[in-house]
Amino acid sequence: MLAKSAHGKWVMPSRRRFEASMKSLTEHLWFETPHRRDYLNITDKIEELVRRSGVQEGLCLVNAMHITASIYINDAEDGLLRDYDDWLEKLAPHEPTSQYRHNRTGEDNADAHLKRQIMGREVVMAITNGKLDLGPWEQIFYGEFDGRRRKRVLVKIIGE
Amino acid sequence: MLAKSAHGKWVMPSRRRFEASMKSLTEHLWFETPHRRDYLNITDKIEELVRRSGVQEGLCLVNAMHITASIYINDAEDGLLRDYDDWLEKLAPHEPTSQYRHNRTGEDNADAHLKRQIMGREVVMAITNGKLDLGPWEQIFYGEFDGRRRKRVLVKIIGE
Amino acid sequence: MLAKSAHGKWVMPSRRRFEASMKSLTEHLWFETPHRRDYLNITDKIEELVRRSGVQEGLCLVNAMHITASIYINDAEDGLLRDYDDWLEKLAPHEPTSQYRHNRTGEDNADAHLKRQIMGREVVMAITNGKLDLGPWEQIFYGEFDGRRRKRVLVKIIGE
Image (cartoon, rainbow over all chains, first blue to last red; front, side):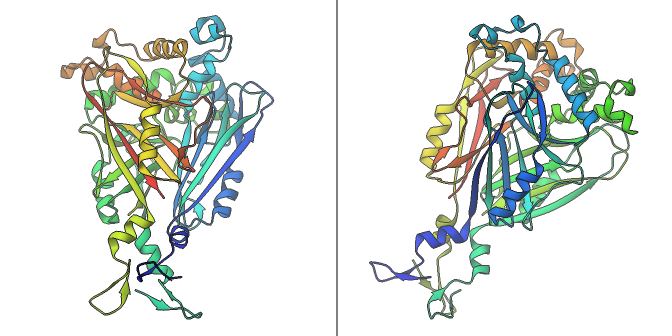
């Protein structure tokens, strides 16, 4: 829609221009896991948000908003999830908690900050033809390393 | 180009508006490496796609679509590639394959899922003035940890 | 603003269309740390650039342009920074430098290339309502693993 500006020239109102050129969706998801460490498959939730966004071509960012949790993409296979857990515990053991300076602040979660660096904070995925452009085995996981309390994940979708 | 809408107002047709406001390019690259683990410099391929996209200012996502491979950025120096390989094998050894629960499914690639978490799934790069905005030594690598079969990499470019 | 094209149709000049549909900001930050390894909180600098960009909804990429440094997001707690440093030194020790093939090139920084893979090259953050959409404890860090020389970090902001 065009409107006549104060200077007598035809312009497209900026609101419409905004809506036409880029779509975005912002959503915060909440998780509270029953154990200190848990691995939740959140692929369906993210696919639903991509549909809702209406974006056909764009990018989808999903990131943990807490610094002792991860978003990562890998296999939804129970044995592998337990392998990850054993491996992370070997690379950055929870006990003894006194081995970490961070825990002198009264926390006991220094290991969770380290584990999250290995697994990563975020994933960025392509949206193609209105859908997440994932490989056949790619599943999106929320990795929790200091659970049993409510934590947030951010989903940001931009594109057209 | 403007056209008269059914309501008698001048509008810019949506197709043109789309093309004008955001460009995107989607490409899937295929790789089949000769060894279980290989490190391929794919910088030239990605630079060519950026040129082809016509994007001047934007972002370029490159991600492995398989969950036992990585896209990462580091040095194209043969000694370092072998250092990475030794180091990853130390942090997440292939043998004995029986140490991983995932391998009870009939796979022998649990270690590859772990190695890929260290090296990462994806990189996101800036495009500035029509080119990848990389530092002088930044090279884009496909890291394969369970090779000898065809696997895909996704390149998604968005911007203007 | 509209202009009459050579073909006598009303078109919006491309420059204006560009400005209206997508904003972008590109900035290179320089750092020179006093020690081989250092961890600098750069959150304020990035927030300032987001303000300056004028982007309300979009993405902010921050990446190291050197391959022995990281951008990562975690806690601004001194004990934790020292835990990271000890942990990285355990996973990829600097000494003996002769253990790495890369160092036969005359470098002594092979360990820095490995450490940076654990901590990551980049972060991608959402911009919502004109601000970085960060969790309460999320702080952006420049992690240096081979310091005492000038190095660059790239900030790329795109959106509307």
